[in-house]
Image (cartoon, rainbow, N blue to C red; front, side):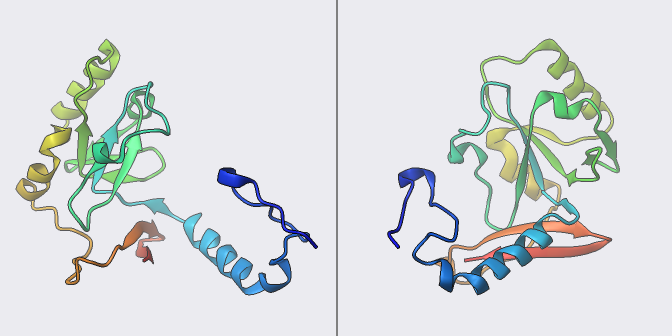
Amino acid sequence: QPGFGLGRYGTLFGRHSTWWDYSGEWIDYLTRCQYVLQKGVKVADVCWLFHYDIRYNYPSKLTFLPRGYDYRIAYPEDLEDVRVVDGVIVFPNGAESKVLAVPAFPQMDERTAQVLEELRAQGAVIVQGNEVADALIAGRIQPDFDVIDTSLKLEYLHKKVGGMDVYMISN
């Protein structure tokens, strides 16, 4: 059975792949991961507000955070139904963020500016993108974890599932 690749777009995922007969445990692992990832709501310290022109191809340096903090991305329409509870921005699905970061974009529509002012009046912490680290320190927002060995490249996802904190960690 010859293998078949899709180049930079991925790989053929099916019974004709040369590795298919050896993939059972790996597929079981992916299934368990997907089960966990679909539960609960994401907990993110920072919510980055992007404008409509940036969708999936944003520069990673735009969302830089100190180690141990996580972020989510929102677009102007996502802010229409949020509320602020004790200084925490709460989205309709229950997701929360403690800081709303607005990158220095050259334009913003009037409605978005109006919503930001309303959220600020309700007690939301809203900062320019380059002020995020200072806002986290000033707000005494602790990182989710600290790693002694900084050479380790750890990625994680923090979710709330039924009142419990659940972390998915990869290295």
